[in-house]
Length: 277
Image (cartoon, rainbow, N blue to C red):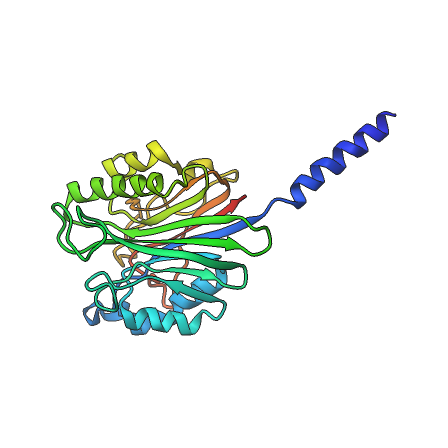
């Protein structure tokens, strides 16, 4: 009788594990195409960016600082993916994008929306004390195998305006409430130009989970994410994040992979997390 109970318990636990799905997430500021970057110019490292993404093969990639030519290049290189997103300067192709790439073999796009991080989020605008237009890209994605819906936000906050950064985080949290998805599986990622003790991160942590803190396995990589292309410095400035809600976190890392010439792939490290649902 005892053996039967043990067998049943093992079978039950195994069934739960079998029904547990995972998804891989990457947030990556790829640095805009700037010829003044010298050896770090986009044309010299773009294949490394594409190869790094392909190697880790995330299901969702939140890209920041992509100009349209960079976006089109990655779209050509990443064969399993489609993307959503618009240029922040005109809502079309002008200026930087904050697109969400998604593995279309696994996920189906249900809806998408771009909001400007400002007092007038429905139209092209500069918010509060920001130096320029800033956006958040939203997508709702259906997991084809399980039927689960995952809500994904990807943003790039202003590097000058502290009020804009704090209010941008509040706007995203407010949007989650307005969409009525507080109880749904949600991911908020991006370059928030904010360190862990600063207002935008604290706003997010009041409503969401810092995925790094929930990881079941030990965090891997440098403490920080911004390297500034400086290979001589310890990377301590953490400004790129993945936040989650209603999801498990299996692992979390800052990817410190280098190019063959030992230069950085970008001036930010990619953030990578494995999530369960």
